[in-house]
Image (cartoon, rainbow, N blue to C red):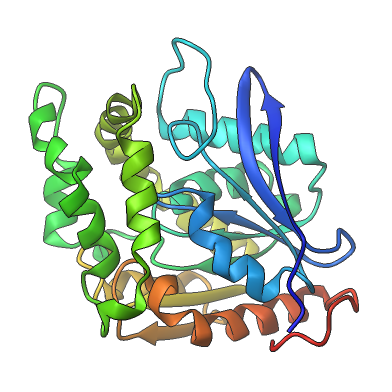
Amino acid sequence: MTVPHVAHRFADVDGVRVFYREAGPRDAPTLLLLHGFPSGSHQFTRLIDALGTRYHLVAPDYPGFGRTEVPAGFRYSFDRLADVVEGFVDRLGLDRLAIYVFDFGAPVGLRLAVRRPERITGLVVQNGNAYEEGLSEAAREFIAIRPGEEEKILPILTLEATRGQYEGGADDPALIAPDGWTLDQHFLDLPGRKEAQISLALDYRDNVARYPEWQAWLREHRPPTLIVWGRRDPFFVEEGARAFLRDVPEAELHLFDTGHFALEERLPEIAPLIARFLARLGGPSGHGKTGPF
């Protein structure tokens, strides 16, 4: 098995030092990996190892996550996260790219798609919601939290909750390495990070208000779409995965008996699906074809 060379760099975007991981040949199809809450680019390490010799994979940390550094006074909202990711894409010269959207990656990535539709070659959706029916009752209760009720957000910023997001719904929690949720909690516990997450939690209702806009983009542009979904997700339920087929009937849908962080447990099944999807978008460059996918 050929292992990719993975670069770990910072890119300056309007005063934000965006940390990112990059692997693979630039002349191969590009996949922008957009992480979820409460994680970062490290959640894609195994996927990059699996596909990063044949395809161009780029995984940034958002402001408020991972190793990305923000200036004093940065105001956290999903619009601002999308601003930074859009600037990051420009900074790296990614003119044509597919996007992998998971959890928070969906509102970030779909904002980018609406702003720059000419750049989007395809969409990989992994438990990234864009439909009302995809919201569980627990998700709806969380989205209903308003300013002045910040104490209701604090329980999801604990180690117990972070671990539960990874292991909840999994067939075999022993297959989920503890490194992911341990590292997530390390970053959550840094100064200012909980305040950032509270701001984003209070802003999440704006994402739901944008669902019709994103659905209209999907109907108009009908991007090649691969949906891989953990059907035991306690936040974004299976109906949200199926709802994409209303607007992109040609989408390829795969449901897995696992939870929210489906890639953690089901990477051996999901990585080949992504490899085949990227091959259909433009084919590998020819580098590293000895890999398993």
